Image 1 (tube, one colour):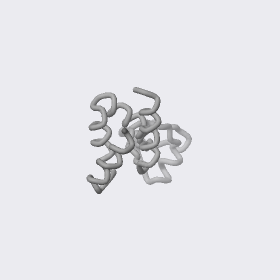
Image 2 (cartoon, rainbow, N blue to C red):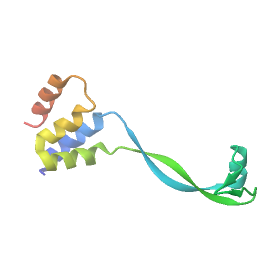
Image 3 (cartoon, one colour):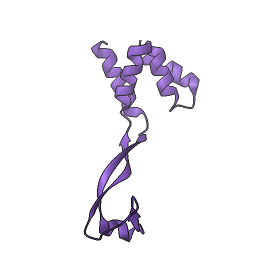
Length: 104
């Protein structure tokens, strides 16, 4: 990928709306916090107020549009970029014209 194309992809990524995706992970939670939330037992055992428990928790990360656009461009060129950006733009004719002007 040329430097000019990389700069153009960065510019497109900056104007796309912020999106998040969920990542399932685990986190330590105190027994006191679990009791305050209304939990009575974890894995069939009673919760101790002073104990620590590992619980599944969802975390949210922002989508890295630049990385995804770069991957789309590497795989399918301008058509890959168009198909990725099309998910966020309503006016398809305007999208095609804008991307054609940007990538000239």
